[in-house]
Image (cartoon, rainbow, N blue to C red):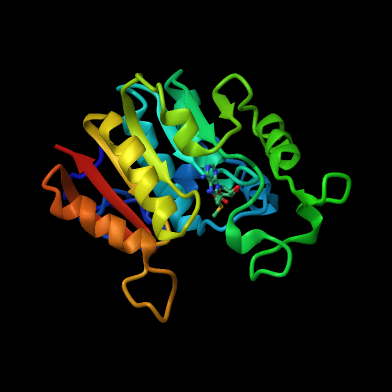
Length: 237
Ligand SMILES: C[S@@+](CC[C@H](N)C(=O)[O-])C[C@H]1O[C@@H](n2cnc3c(N)ncnc32)[C@H](O)[C@@H]1O
């Protein structure tokens, strides 16, 4: 169960640097029991730390009992494996939104450009093929619903309450604010808002996710839990 203050006594299951108070207590060996294929996860391109991924898994395992989960920004599917595996175990659904054209920093000439993900025929980044392969390899095709468009377009007529929203799409101020404004209102009571790439120190990374995270914290709509690396964890009151 999440959020209890009991400490873990199984040394194997506690592998990793878990904070007793944190939202995420699952350890590596437990994750294996839960059906992750670590080799597959390692082979999938992406920006998520393993500890953050396991936290996504554990929170989604609780949340997806209440309703569907949704992620914004799936790239090649690393976060999708963690969230989707938890959803599959609860016979739930993960909506995965991405236009699959890459964020600003993933374009040619930018810091996170990956030439293997550039389609010379269309002359643009295309992560959808890799994402499809990941879903197939991870056995998530009957759990994950890919939504291929800009996130605010998907939000326009959205009406389904969500048990978890994971924001990891565009990282500009405009993009993160828009994702928060479009999606946070769909989170059901006791559902979760997770925001990736939160860096308090501007020397360590872009500030947009951090500012939006602070906005959510001060809104009084959420209870704040300790961060897992750069992953902010908020629970809807
Ligand atoms: C940092 S990557 C996501 C990483 C992924 N969560 C993982 O675990 O590896 C950001 C992704 O967001 C997508 N993206 C950026 N802006 C978007 C938008 N407005 N709507 C939909 N997807 C967007 C990009 O195409 C990119 O694949």
